[in-house]
Length: 113
Image (tube, rainbow, N blue to C red; front, side, top):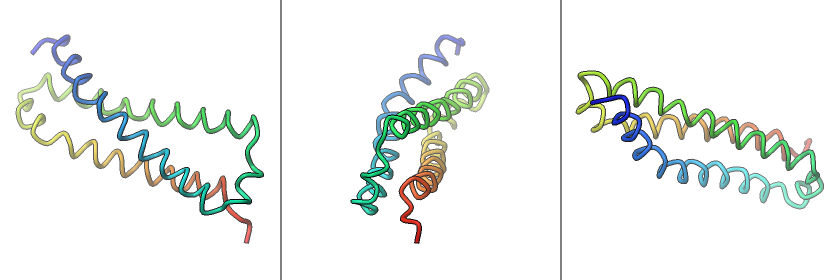
């Protein structure tokens, strides 16, 4: 498999799952926003929105770590095995990102009690 084929295969696998990743993380933030409502509404400001944007971009940069692993392993002799089990990396990464997102959301919308 050439580098170009490895990159194309990685894009084909990871990009459709990016939507799932972002929806899950957004749902966590919205859930904690809703649980702390109406106090959480008072936290909305330009700086708050910019911070959310920054965190969303950083979460998507972290998502790209899957690409590096995928391209590297696809170029090895373990490609067939990798293609069968790479969903595990997606699930573990999603759970890790969801955990980090939960802690950030708790900090953003904490009631102070």
